[in-house]
Length: 195
Image (cartoon, rainbow, N blue to C red; front, side, top):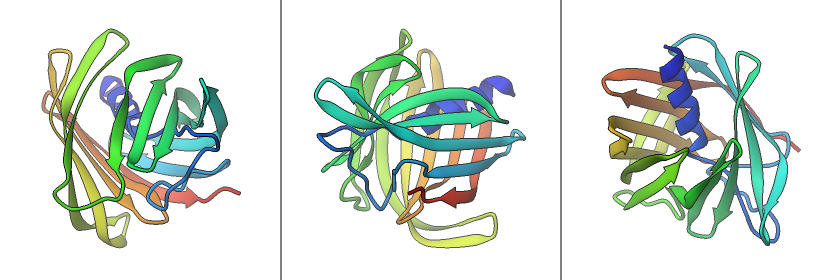
């Protein structure tokens, strides 16, 4: 169960860290200092993702996010929002060898793209596809959410599926992940927009 929660945190991080002269934001992932998302895990417990500020990588600036599980720091990541999408540059202190696009801008139903990168000596490959669907999370209905579905994902020798629902002016409201047949779900409980 801890291992699956760890992979959920890893994939939650696969969706965030921004660079540019000034760190950009997007209505589909409204990153600002102090913004936070609190999730309830199907594995039990609470996961908090918080924007702690910005950080530099080369001449770019990205958003620094910290993920805590039951109040203990579990992961950090650096995300850049570019004109064509959201990219993850690092997980914890480890840079991915190629920035990973986890959301396409502007989002459009049917768009898809492949990804192939290495992190912590593991090769991660797969394909993302955007769908549009209504989703209800903790009793709150969201119409026309953009579902980014990771298909045919391999993490080393393991198979995985990742689904993330993005809602305008909120961000990620739900994450569903399976690894070798074990499933986990994160559902948004509270979103604080930051300042």
